[in-house]
Length: 447
Image (cartoon, rainbow, N blue to C red; front, side):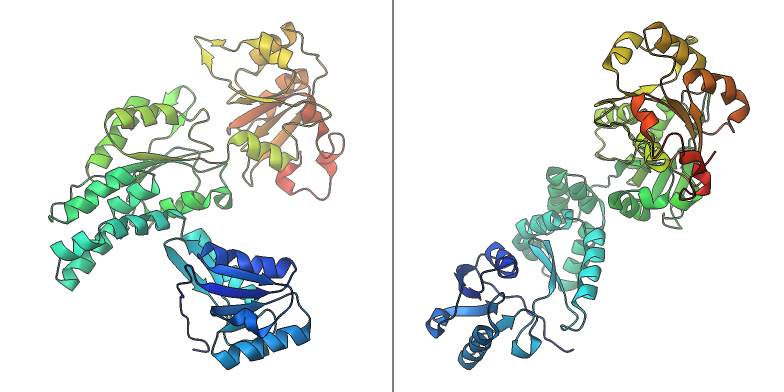
């Protein structure tokens, strides 16, 4: 070990920071956050160290920094001079702040950039909710010690609380319910109960999932997933996790929605940690709202984890702006599902808005969409496109007007999930007339 790590209590204690530039201010910020009484000085006088427990120098002439270092070390005051390890008696680590928890990473000054990269990985792996979990444990610290005097038993109980349903509830924002589990642990009668996470898997690429979604997938006992979830995403799950397929295709449901709701409730009542994994975002035409309502009515704790919805992913990969200051300032998401054979869309305000229209699951009802938009005043020359398997390495695009799409779609489609995009902004891709032949695009983005 090159340096001994230590955490100092600086609350109300004097710390000298010498320097006037951005680096000095940046060094002062975490000291202030830790409660230190920071003295900022542009120059240095040895009297400035009176009563100080720490000193930092940056953004000052070398002779000033050398004087600070010498004076501080002579008094036995730890001193750090930024980017001058030979003048330092301590070094500052890269910090992950999850108050009341603090994680520090240091390379001993050898590779600070590497320390920052490692800190970034830790920040991704340790979400801010761990701080709330630690604060909850602090609330019950004395009670748990009193009720569980045996150290080994206390450790087992705390490990169960920190890795089980209580932690899940804290991460989902249900601290009050988590507190009940902490209280129950004092009597040794912790109630069994699960939790459901309604997770958006995004468009299909595993690296487009949120960090929270990836973490939950790796922790789940059971994964209830639909047909849009690919192997790359499911591979992120625990190998021993149970997987239940409840996929749906148009006009054919493997499992009806009411049964899916019941399944989520029953699994949670068994004490399982359940991830309900949906393509895109669970609250954008994913019926996640119905599942959330059913869970709420059954008294099951749940959390919604958003995902990248299809319109965003498709447009980004196709290099098509959903909004553009020179074309449109709005975007509308609608579903292409029909009701009793009719496309149930109020076309008049949709056309009047003159924005980008993103139609989910709209290829079957494409002729009705075209006729409805044109009959309410949309110009027949308005740019439009079909995007199949959007956001994945299988994405395909068909560009033209709605008349062109209606004529060519039957022979073009491979029956994959397809998004329809219509509007002036669609024609402002990089660039509409040239993008299909651009050598810079990946093969799947060319038609």
